[in-house]
Amino acid sequence: MADRGLLIVLSGPSGVGKGTVREAIFKDPETRFEYSISMTTRRPRDGEKDGIDYYFRSRAEFEEAIREGKMLEYAEYVGNYYGTPLEYVEEKLASGIDIFLEIEVQGALQVKEKMPEGVFVFLTPPDLAELKNRIIGRGTESLDIVDERMETARKEIELMSSYDYAVVNDLVPEAVRKIKAIIETEHLKTKRVIHHYKKMLEGLK
Ligand code: 5GP
Image (cartoon, rainbow, N blue to C red; front, side, top):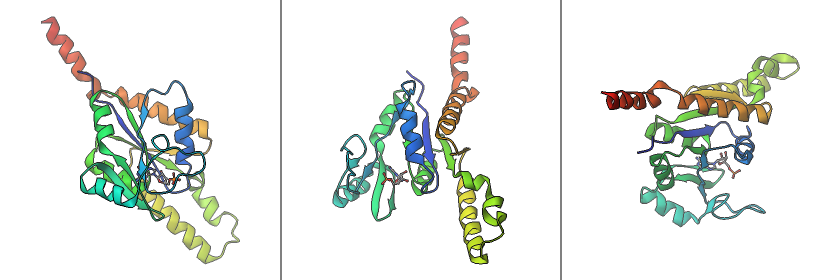
């Protein structure tokens, strides 16, 4: 039987560019993992297709899927539901295929509860990495603005602490390269490969 696939979860604060990074990853013909298409109640944007960009569903249909336990996770974001159908993820992981989710932070925390063996990557806004400059650098901001920025940064850093990796989204190709390196490294963890060696040894007895 194939090894179980790796579940990769890319998340991060709103507006950080998760979608752009995900698109760049899947444009690369060398990408070996599969994207889990989400379900949403929002309307399709121009050019978006059902079953490719999202499964576009009504609220009633989405709520039925929740009731029937068909969602790995879901969240309400700007008045619409977004969620990951469980069956596809389960099937692919069981057949040894790596699955990639690109979801907002509430959903990522639910996945972490249910599948803690996943790899959780937090995409970090570049300005968070330059916190001090941004917040007090120019020295011209009012105290209110400084407080507001501190609060946003505090929340983002708190969120980051539940993840395994933080990748700054400064240059998209760099972020993509780092995410791929993370996935490659995760596959090399001894806990993922040692059983092959043990089996081999047994076969030699
Ligand atoms: P958009 O409407 O721009 O396509 O996506 C809005 C937000 O929903 C993005 O932050 C995206 O990461 C998030 N999102 C997309 N699919 C899912 C999903 O299946 N579950 C959760 N929790 N968030 C999702």
